[in-house]
Length: 238
Ligand SMILES: C[S@@+](CC[C@H](N)C(=O)[O-])C[C@H]1O[C@@H](n2cnc3c(N)ncnc32)[C@H](O)[C@@H]1O
Image (spheres, rainbow, N blue to C red):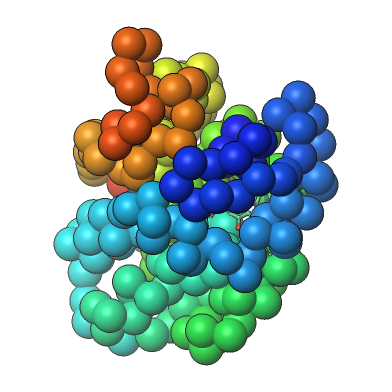
């Protein structure tokens, strides 16, 4: 996402943003603040499918009636995940994000019962242990955004037996991050904290906007970035 902000995106036409070299999360979140009003229309142009695919994956595995499930949308952005959840009858939705501008857009959707400002990796989630039936994080697990060190927080706020759904991109420029993420996920599984239910590769995650995002030799034009959806069930008792 950061890379997309540098130079001019051929599809959405955005031309400014933080320098790629900046490791500063605060600047990244400021970038999201500035992008927030245009985010939905820009990602629609990129055919961004992650929210729908992740919500499909999660809701197929969630037991019980939709209205009974309390769900946390982590790095909720403008609320695209909430829109997908609401369309399937899930109405008890909380959201957190590190960008006030994105949260403002999410608030305007009126789909979340509660929204909080929280910088993942630097602050704990603002919820007690074992609060949610399901926790999702879509489109935020990559270099310079949410660090892998934030994953245990997601697990902490999930109810015993509850579900955690995560996504990341699997294009070449994100492979190092994905490796570190999988090491974190596997360590938690080996420790008995959760079990993996799904690891679903997705070929067409969203359109690439730069040749750096796709496999060498592939033209960025009309090429899709690939991704993966993980679904875990938290252990039932400690
Ligand atoms: C690409 S958007 C995804 C938003 C939404 N989940 C979606 O799929 O449309 C990434 C979101 O993650 C948030 N974000 C990135 N790093 C974060 C961090 N460390 N803590 C909190 N939010 C973060 C950004 O503010 C942004 O809203």
